[in-house]
Structures are given as structure tokens and as C-alpha cells.
Image 1 (cartoon, rainbow, N blue to C red):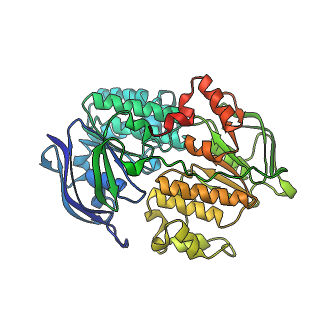
Image 2: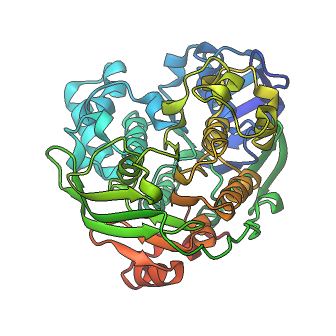
Image 3: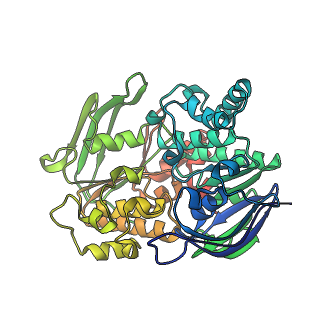
Length: 473
């Protein structure tokens, strides 16, 4: 029996010049492991939302075609579909409803009216499965991006769905946690669960020998076993020139801890030269995002100093890309966002939008963009200011290979013009190709050339933090 069948599914969002899905038909047998891949904007998230019923019940759109679940027409109610389908969204914050981790995982089973003892058992099992037992009493808003993504997965697993939809589930996870999640995907599949994963990082998934569906412009372009040729990793990132001499940024003895928490940094020191890219990697919750907030002047350190050359203070001449792009989008349209809060844009605004593939969306509300489109918007918001210091927090999330190369090219262009950049990313191959030096934040900080740091991590058994683990094979 097919767990899911789709017949001539078309989804057209209001204000968009083209449909997100166009006459899409496919079958997914029960118990199958499927990977949905394709360029950014190809319709992967829309497919998931349509299967669950978010579109059109929660997200307005014109919808035609049919969806069948286990041989029966899918009920129109989102509530009734949620009894059999679990979804982990691309943006983990979009599905967090409560204020405490344990309450969030219990929210779904409670809405199903399950007995209290069964709810408690499901919550504990789900938290243990994703490694969040120790954080069960934490406030949800204090979690890192990766911890929020694991929480969203736990919430979905607590519903015991027959079909699990994972929309870029490793996007906010550190490499070790991402490798663990992929192992969990394999276990769920072996248990007979139907699992459908939308993902850009395909190398480790290929080892599970799934069925690949390749979407392009809302249509099914390929359906096969084995990674489609279109998805093969192209090692053509631009290589930045060696950094210039001198110091752009000087950090000395930096220490910081959140109230009630352990120290994230203990006397952390490093320099950044003009034209240098420093890649920052490490586990979720190690302080990577906090480091960028400190450097941008949004948070004050408990000890230590941060100094920009020529007397600039933290925050002066800084371009910051937040981990969650919607945290820095405020205007009513994409074009207005680009012009917001600045006397001028360096270069024609339309040209910047064209470079980011957003020119046709200039009049769209920023929060109606896909996660990948929002990410590219925040990248050009930072770049168009021509800052001396670029702080990029996970800029490659939601991007296909073409857009990853574009972001990498823009980053290299900026440092070649004299900017310095700090790149926080779980995309280890991208860090390996772009960074002059790598800073690993963990129980013990490591700082050195990419080769030195990756060799040390491999010798410590942290293979998931090395580029070889993530390269497509």
C-alpha cells in the first residue's frame, strides 16, 4: 500500500508569478525512505506543507489535485492529518508553541487526548531519542538553533506518526548531532516507518540507499535510487587570496556565561586580519552565535576586550547575518527592507536583488519568502553596507549548491576588498574551502589552519566535524 499518493498537485501562492508545485504526481509506498532534493525554491517545503494540510488551511494558496494517505483521500482537516503525519519544519522556531521543553513535547499528545501516563512515557522517550533529557526543564526561548531543531523532532516523534516528514532536519544541527539524526532516520526506516527527508546535504544520506526525488520548478524532474547527477557536489568554490598584513579585530581574554549556565568562553583570544576569513565550528550550545553577538556589540562580555582597528567600537562598520533570518526583517516589502535604516545602498538596489535571485520578489513581504530566500536577503542586507567586519551565522542554510557558491563568491569578494569575516557554519566542507583559519569551540578551543584543526578533531574521534564525512560519495 502507498503511504502517500499525490495526483496532479498544483499549489500557487498569491502574489507569486509561478506555481510552487505544478501538476505533481508521485507514490510513496509504506515503509520507504525517500529523499526530496532540488534547487532552492523547487517546492520541497511546499510539498511537505501540502501533505500535512498546512497548505491551504494555514498558509493561503490556490490548491488543485488530490492527496491520498494509506489509500484514502486525505481528510481536509489539518488536525486529522496530524494523527498520521509528523512534520519537522525547516524553521524550528515556526512550530514551537510553549515555554518549556517538556511541555512542548507533550503538547501534541495532549491534543490527541491520550492518557496522562502514556503522554509522560512518550515525552521521556522522545526527549531521550534526540538527546534533550538534560534540557527538559529549560525555557524553549533559551535553546540554541540546533537544540530547537532537536526539540521539534522530539515533538513530532511523540505523536508516533506513521509518516515522518523532515524538512532540512540537519540545517541547524552541529555535525555530530546531524550524524546522529541520520542514524535515527535509518533506525526509523528499519522499524518500518515511512520517512521523507528534504535535504541539500546528500552525501551521508546516500549511504542509506534511499529513493531520491528531484524537484525542479515545482515538477518532478527525476525519480531514482542513487544521488541524481544534478545533486553531485561541485568543488568549485572560489578560493580567497591570503589575508593582508595587520590586525582588523583583536580579541583578548574573552569570557562569558549566561545566568545559571557554565562558561561558554574562558579567556578566549584571537586576531583577525583584513582579508581574512575565520571559520567557527563546534557543537550546538558551544557559544558560536554568542561570540558573534559579542563581536557585534549586542551583548557585553564578563571579562576581556574586543577592539576593532582604528578605534572602532564593536558594532561600528559591522555587517551581521543572524542565524534566524526573520529576527532581522522588519519592512513591508523586500525592496523596502533593502533601503531600511540606511542613507544609501552601495550600488543599485535592484542589482543587489538580482544577484540574490530576489528581483521578482521585490514587492513581496519578507516573511512570506522561503527560508532560503530570507537567508539570501539578509546576506545582501549585510554585504550592501560594505562593512569592515562581516559576521555570518549559518549563511548556507536552505541553499542549493548554486546559491552556496553565490554566497561564497560574495564573501570572497568582500574580503578581497579588505573586509574581515567570521563565518559560523555547520557546513564543514564550505568552511574547509573558504576559511584561512578555523576556530573550534567545544570543551577545549582549537585554533589553527583548517588542515591542523580537522586533523586534530579526527584524532579525537570527532570525524563528523571533518569535511570528508560530508562530501558526497
